[in-house]
Amino acid sequence: MTETVTKPSAQTGEIFIDREYIEGLLEEARHTSDDTINRYLDKAERFEGLTHREIASLLVTNNPDHLKRIFSVAWKIKQRIYGNRIVLFAPLYVSDYCVNRCSYCCYNCSHQFNRSKLTMDEVREEIRILEEMGHKRIALEAGENDRECPIDYILECMSTIYGMKFKNGEIRRINVNIAATTVENYRKLKDIGIGTYILFQETYHQPTYDRVHLGGPKKNYAYHLTAFDRAHEGGIDDVGGGVLFGLADPYFEVLGLMIHNEHLEERFNVGFHTISVPRLCPAEGMSMRDFPYLVDDAVFEKIVAVIRLAVPFTGMILSTRESHAMRKKLLRLGISQISAGSSTGVGGYAKQERRRGTPPQFEINDDRSAMEIITELMDDGYIPSFCTACYRNGRTGDRFMSLAKSGQIKNVCLPNALMTLCEYSMDYGDGYFKQKAAETISREIPGIANEKIRVRTAENVEKIRMGGRDFFV
Ligand code: SF4
Ligand code: SF4
Image (tube, rainbow, N blue to C red; front, top):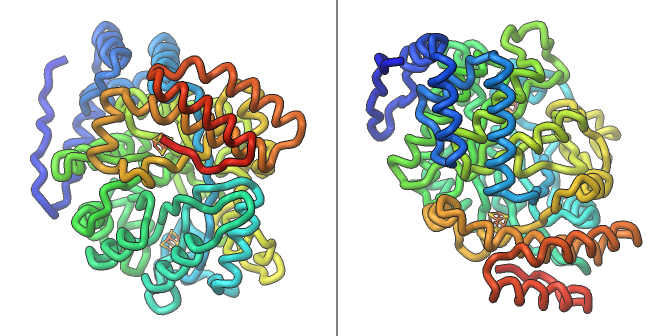
């Protein structure tokens, strides 16, 4: 297939998503020969990533042989780069006030319910419960409302959380998912110690974006699209993107994500740290019938696997929107980070949302406890990881990316996963869990390639068993 669609150049601050370019790629991709697709898969198997054209061809193929190979290459990449580690986190919803009218979200300001935001005492209560579950990493979430939930409120929540210490430790990393904002506000988030700034574009397809965003500041596609540029200008070099699959053509969205990632790499030398793959879920005040691009399981599996092939060094996050069975499948196709024991309502962990009648932002499909999820991960041969080391070691931005791309990152991820698993098992595990964790740790320590780090990890595991805590490399 000869290349006829030309990639447009992106200038600073402009809309760098070209709809015609992406649609042209997808149209051309339908004529890719079987041999060519196999060559693209050979390339992916060498961890070289994929061009837009190659990604488009893998997205549109429905040939069962190609699909089988896409899935097996995704598993190979996952194993080689991420091993069997799965990083865990939990969302914390602090405010459901919102001035936007997103047609897919129950926090849409035209929906009537008793809105709330957490007081600092309530934040402490939620964090105490999350810490009792063993969480060390959270994603702080809030709707957009400058009056009820200004940046100072978010900063106050963060400093409250970082200031809390418990018998078994503390929340060590706060990722933040709040509305697109100014360089000045991003600088404040950086100064207080944000982990990753997470923002979903929702859809890269501008006509759909305009249609589903009925009102409010979020309606401004360009302002939303360039939020990560401003975050970088404010000093945040660790950002995580995503779309809400189900709003527009999912293949268009994957290419939009890839182009956004490249835009950031070109401008700041560092692309997405993570990509989230939420799928549209039922929520109060919306009907799934209004969304013609709902993504079925087969297409969703293909999308996750193709993203894994296209950007092998970018972490992929899955939430409890997906069912237990689906999460299990997707872990094999590229997901490296999952939430566990989640509540998606304000005050949800303290079960206050029921007393107040406030709804969750969306319905979850995996309502198992954190311990059930973590135990099953180990039973399935994964290493649950509570690692937060990179952010705490200043290993972000291009420092992180160069380690990731050279494959060196696993020399720190594996030891950190084992040390945090040991800590978790000592502090939260029953007899069965402690034994499983000990078996996993003994099995995996010999796999740490660097001898110095291997010896240090074994020593630290012993120290943790004797009561020491919070070791990381
Ligand atoms: S998606 Fe976000 S911005 Fe839109 S209504 Fe929901 S909370 Fe508000
Ligand atoms: S070492 Fe860094 S990249 Fe690896 S799990 Fe920990 S925080 Fe993530």
